Amino acid sequence: MEAGSPGKKKILENPIIGSLVVPVAIILVGALIIFGVTKMLSSDRSYKDLVRELHSKTFGNRWVAAYELSKLISTSSIPEEDIPWLVGNLDELYKSAQDARTRDFIVVAMGALKSDLSIPVLTQAISDSDPNVRFHAVIALSENKLGVEINKNLLLNLLNLEDEAVKQAAIFTLAMHNIPEAEEKLVKLHNSSSVSIRYAAATGLISYRNDVARETLEEILSMSSRPSADAAFSESKVIGLKMNILKSLRKTQWNVLNELIERLIPVEQNLGVVSEMRETVNQLKKR
Image 1: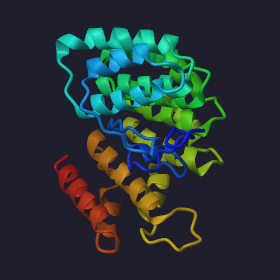
Image 2: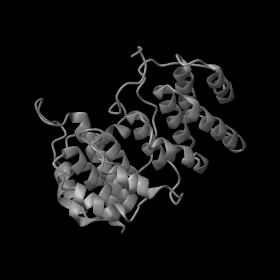
Image 3: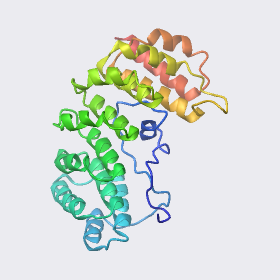
């Protein structure tokens, strides 16, 4: 693999999308970050320049232009009138790209657009031969506006896969869109022997205000934010898990854990988590 090329699902570098990898909790607030490439690239080229470059590049370096395009779209505002043109070109480029890295960043770019016009190609990408592309396609679907029609059956089927990252991404997306048929499946996954799936399912169940998840959510919030060196979870991972739960509780306006959170505030060791706990209690007290 070339230096700087995207490899495995290196998502832990981002505190939100990073929570989709072991250990994991799902935050029910969309956030798409460009990840997987450590070599930062800079360019003054416009998205139209990069699309033209993608059309002309050969197999060996099209992924670089695709990466730059995904980065540009994620940090820029694309004029509404240009989105159909951009989606049409990305659709064509995805279907013609032989290199999985190129397809991967095209999918990330489409997710960053947050346009319902992207849904057909993102749905197709869920069945891509490359696991990274499949993963990012599922995450990208979670970025689309709530209420936009998605292929729920295709996403529900992903919950049966062995690939835990894709499975967790499916949990994230199904919960984000509050798909009713997913609730029963998340309850079953909450009994998984995999702690990552169990935590993902528990946090996903916040979207349904399902009390089955309560004990697991309490377990996560009560964990030490300064774990020992040999603990299963690092400090950053524990903090990420707690943050995700607190933000999800606020988003869903579910105050079932308020009493516990109030008791934990004086003993919580991380100031960021304390701030999130106070905000959660104050906001949900009004319910």
